Length: 91
Picture 1 (cartoon, rainbow, N blue to C red):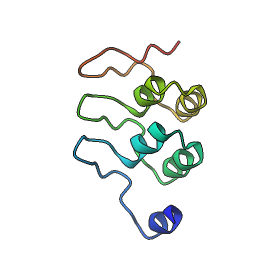
Picture 2: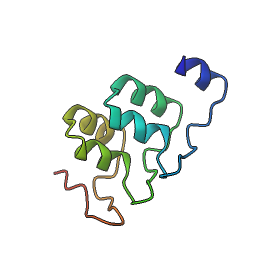
Picture 3: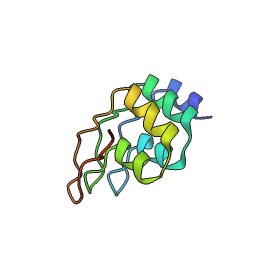
């Protein structure tokens, strides 16, 4: 279903009322396959939520090492800082 929407031109950069993109939501849910698909469709791995959280911050706070590794392989910035908190502290 998601593939059909993406193939039809769904906007992978739109944000909800909290500033979350569909990529943030997929990362939060732990859906590695969906995250890979969204990144193939040029979802913005650097997009920030209202509090400044990047997708990498979300993966770290969700305690998902597989997702953290995927995002780092795909170019997530491990030095990015949230507005409210600190860096992701991924070494």
